[in-house]
Length: 194
Image (cartoon, helix red, strand yellow):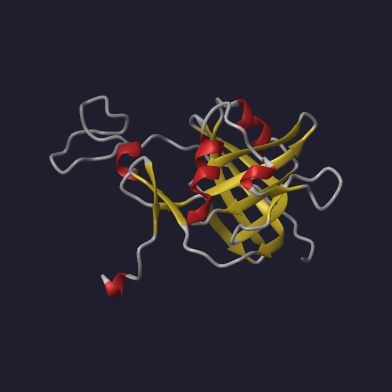
């Protein structure tokens, strides 16, 4: 992919309250109203893993905050809590790989979301990296995006991480793994068929 110059624009973010229909402030649930998390539990999201090679070895975590940012230049973003050791390792790595998960990867997603559970194992389908110093690969993933971390923005308790994608690998097509209301789910068909 052609060379890209990244330019950062900074702004200050102010908290905005979430309003329930009766007008209760639910920004943090402090007044008894719903929180941002409560609202997003109702929003299904695809499940992906972010993996990186670090000096301590390969690391990875589960994200459902993946978003396409730009097609030209190709870029994506994800967010992670700043409080986790793995999140810090991933967010500060120079390169990452974002691995989309299929429904058949639900056990892999659960392992990556569980503190202390085995990750990046051959039993889960991971293979050695294709280049020295790279992370292991999950060849059965529907798609993997590799690239350089070009921006990290602190937003509240999280990092918003932007990745300039320089490689896309497509694997076998399969039903997507989704996360909604604190559980993993499978996409059940097209809306016009419901």
